[in-house]
Amino acid sequence: MNPIEIIPIEGLPEIHPGDRIADLLAASGADLREGDVVVVTQKVVSKAEGRMEAVDPRDPAARAAIVERESVRVLRRRGDLVISETASGFVCANAGVDQSNVPDGYITLLPVDADRSARRIRDGLAHRPGVDVGVIVSDTFGRTWRNGVTDVAIGCAGIAAVVDLRGTTDSLGRTLEVTEVAVADELAAAAELVMGKSARIPAAVIRGVDRSWFRPSSVRAEIVRPPAGDLFR
Amino acid sequence: MNPIEIIPIEGLPEIHPGDRIADLLAASGADLREGDVVVVTQKVVSKAEGRMEAVDPRDPAARAAIVERESVRVLRRRGDLVISETASGFVCANAGVDQSNVPDGYITLLPVDADRSARRIRDGLAHRPGVDVGVIVSDTFGRTWRNGVTDVAIGCAGIAAVVDLRGTTDSLGRTLEVTEVAVADELAAAAELVMGKSARIPAAVIRGVDRSWFRPSSVRAEIVRPPAGDLFR
Image (cartoon, rainbow over all chains, first blue to last red; front, side, top):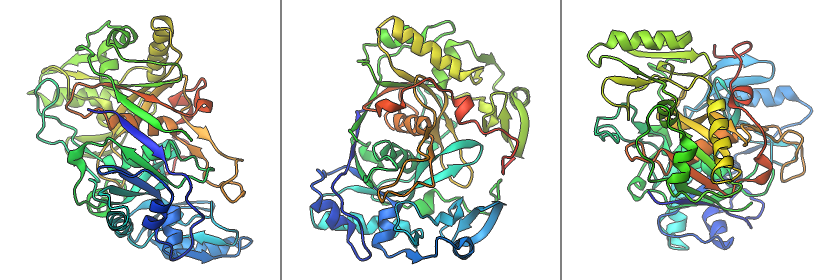
């Protein structure tokens, strides 16, 4: 295996509805190359796609109503916290409704289809800087049983969400038991290491990713676990 | 933020009980530097610590009995799969009992105290190659609601498990809501990207990690969520 490099993308402007992220990435001066993976956070994708909503910050009930509307199934409630399933099938806190790094009086919603968001960025980059890259849209989720949040993939394009190692052999030549690795989530987590929640770095480039992982893919198809048969729903 | 580099450590031999991992890392020729984070997989740590057990591969009941013994609380069962809590407080499949990359007729158990395992490696590296590094012991866990496994930290030393961004401000100068980032889990996930489940690469170096994250820490104290008040136990 080769080394992997994770490079923060600086110089992106504040994002506004209607902005084309691929164009802004190209204009940022980021050095994008064939075979890179570009990770972009949900926050800038949602802003560019106009997935913002005005909400009175002094009215928690208004925000709660948006969380309910964005939820198709509530798993747990405690105080202000709701753990729910979104229309895209993500299970997360407050249906992904978020007010950090958003102007006062606004919240962001998750992209309607973050795989499509990733495809749009990928297609835009293929067009303008003319590079063939994988794209991941990342967001920050909590986890069951473990404190702290990590970044995961909510959308991807041109890069595998899950790599299936079933049928391959381990170092002793035996068939492997554990098998399907959510590489898109690992790439999203890796990218977060150079972002910093408070710095204005909403994107990163990952260079040196296994070439066999580049293929058409979708977080929704490969990572989102259907409720039927889920042990925790 | 600076770029981060993830470098696979090749050239480690097959590990046997009693082996000192720090010495083997030093002998491998890996280029370890001040301020690196070294990620070592559970499998080699368990082997070095003698956390292996003989079990007849034709006797699933024998393996199941070990899983029960290693579990302090069973959350879910389906077929052969058990989701349970271990003595260290990890919730994972089959209490971490695993037979991949282990000689036929054996399984590995989780380290008794993976934070201590990480400290021992860190102390060994401080002694022999004389480098001050952070150390993470990683393992491969499934997740609720998402398909695919990712690597997470089960132990750490000299590097923060969780970085608390509460009280810091976002790019608009407002106080951040989401806050505690499980950087040890993100580092473990990043390291997995250069390991490959089937290659004999059980360790990686991560270079360029934020210097402020280096401090005494513990996965058990910072990441393991106590059962009391947990919404999913």
